[in-house]
Image (cartoon, rainbow, N blue to C red; front, side):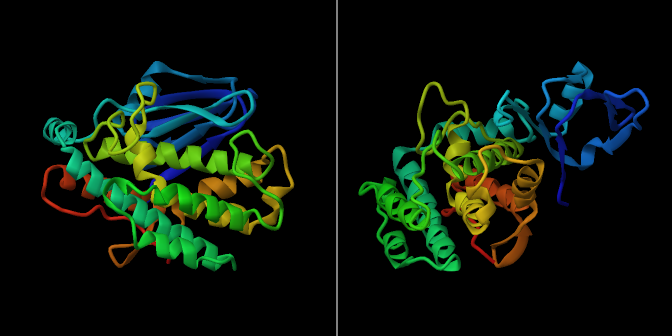
Length: 297
């Protein structure tokens, strides 16, 4: 079942009544809204005036709800995730932490192959030259030792930015802000799926930084980024605004429900993430040899 995504842009209070999340807006005359906790997958809290009870936070954690908090610029700045979300967590984490460099190299090769294939398809769908990126996807070596990812990225964003002199830079001109927002939501969704599959976000297959608590999420989300890119670069309005509107953010949040192809089936992107992380857990446990990644429908 596809979980709900809730977005709160104004102040109020979130609490729990029975098994329901209750939202009471700031205005005393405003009507309360209730949501079944078990039906929620993601909550984005944009307002700094939101009050949340500790019991509500605990219930959201226990139900593996990704709660994303935004900063004063209204961009995602952090998230709440549980310590564990799978009954086999200890066995899976043990396999994850003891994975050999050879296994990690093979898994990273598969990840970059999937990313480059999806980048090529994104370029093709948007009418740009794509064959160089497609060719790079077929020559990735273990651990991406030839750095095909970086070569592909330069060509990929060079093509996407041709018409508007765009350069991918987190602090750069639009639509960098839209990409940042979309990637942050994707990162939160990926972290939620990783925890749900019994793994630790902090131990990646490639990303390794003592200051990065989401290394594995940053690895797994790579082949999913082109789904964000297609929407952002396919909507010219994202190039025109320094401040994302509520409508812009809603469009990016809706990406979690967009259909992708995984295991020859159509699945919402948020559900596909769980297929990917579950297959990765089985790879760590040596029950499978390949990670299941999505493709464009």
